[in-house]
Length: 244
Image 1 (cartoon, rainbow, N blue to C red):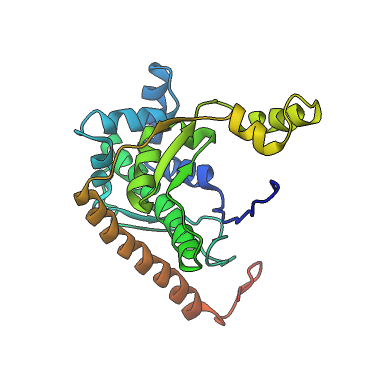
Image 2: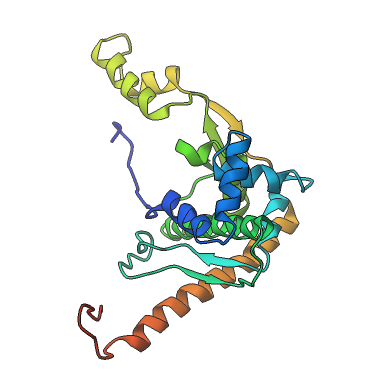
């Protein structure tokens, strides 16, 4: 992709859609929409601000999801398991139907996505591809809570580019080289890009907390696989097919 560099790719499917699906499935969705619109926010920002306002540090917000666990694979697993039939699992829900319950589900979804990312990072590490920083962009990159949960889960520093549009900046770098205002892509990268904000250091108690929740995440993945294997081969009915 860039001269003298290798690109290793590992992706997750439907990340934003997974959070939307979780939020929309909650009984308080209509109430939350009205409250968010009243203050000019989208629901994710609204829920994040409510959660963060009640903790001493960003990392502690993950504890809202202590008793709720989400494997947010509504649309398969791309990396590192390459499982096209993997599906979402949610555990720990009760009959609470208020916005507070919705907040807990929202944070649990963010944790689940971060654990999926940690699986990808661990797969790279197992093959000798290590790193100490993750640069995040897009809508998720604007969320301090998302960045902190990813940092606390993966052990990587999470950085936001100085520019709000890193994809467009990459195109501008290519244009600068084509126009000969920069001598090479490497020179353009060094001169035109910079790191903005960095995530906070991870507290030791949060490392332990996420390690425990990742164990539950692994159990849920095993349950998903074994439940599909158990049902495989059962009789299908009209309009439905058994997947292998």
